[in-house]
Image 1 (cartoon, rainbow, N blue to C red):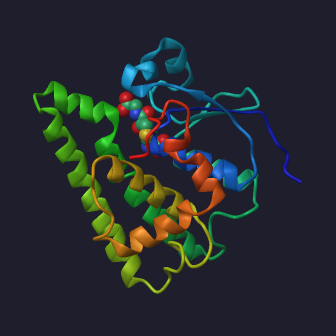
Image 2: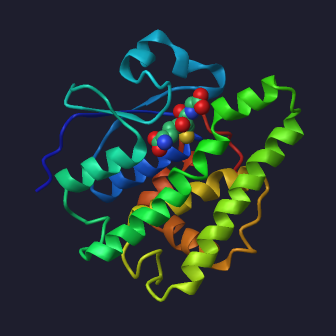
Length: 222
Ligand SMILES: N[C@@H](CCC(=O)N[C@@H](CS)C(=O)NCC(=O)O)C(=O)O
């Protein structure tokens, strides 16, 4: 039986980091109340939210009224250790390192380059909207290329990033497909990434957690 704590998730409909956490909560059968911030309107700089997360970024997860947990990967690790079923990390030590490495490729090396604060800084430095989008598309393309090369070449890849189980790496990979689509970066040149993204999006937990299904998302899928 799941010991369901009181969970409040501060997020933004389009946020890829919030999407990762929403999927993990859904897979583990946990209900969370989501508090929607509008990052484009600057809600992350509201003093009330900064008191919760001085970094001014979502997601932030408040568990049973305790100080907020922040950083999507730290939140995933917390959920994984507290709620073991279903596991989102493989049992084997090397396999866990592989899954965490694939995850970091997205979360640590790609995502930070395309967040609103970086895009806003580039705009302030004089880049027009097209140049800012080209910047984001470039880094997304680099991330997708590295993921594709690694996944396609490795026999450990299966229906999902690691064999037949959904792991942190799939949550991260699927989250990268969101800005890729928004910016018109095709997934077809990355067939393994496209195949795994489709397998994830076929699952209820991903479908319900998807940015385009959240409050504030545009009515038309894009
Ligand atoms: N590494 C962090 C990234 C957090 C982050 O930057 N989130 C974005 C939304 S996906 C955000 O809140 N950005 C606010 C901003 O850039 O001003 C994580 O994985 O949680």
